[in-house]
Length: 170
Image (cartoon, rainbow, N blue to C red; front, side):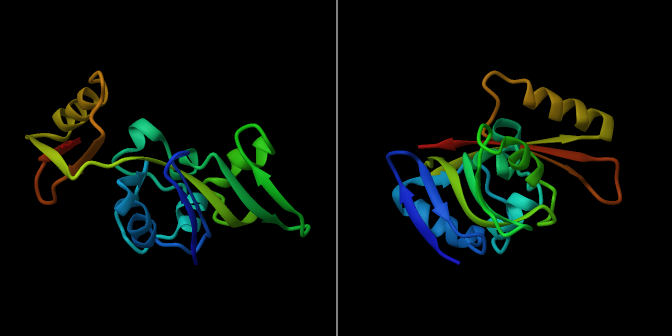
């Protein structure tokens, strides 16, 4: 349940699987860094995010949580410990996301970090139908460059949708 290292030069945090997002951000933010994908619930663990296919408002840029982990170390059912990446034990690496621990148990994850800014500028767009909201979401994703964060919400008891975009601000 430990953040083992935060390397601000390589922009990598090495953590154990029971580290929560709250602990991970607490270890990286004082250095001006954040994981490229941060699930919004602070008690989600790194292991849960890796094995559970976590997505967030920055996933349109960076992919699932596993996609920001250049390497992971797992314990396989036969007792072997394997380091996995997109090139080393690649088949196992790519199968981990969404496996919920059925293929292997996560022992360690290296997590890619990015620079954080002190503020985030948020823009809200309200759409009067789900179809318009989907078009608004697609439009936001196709901006060049796309916003750092994109979120879409269907509002209950109406056809309204809300598209939220945000970028780091100095």
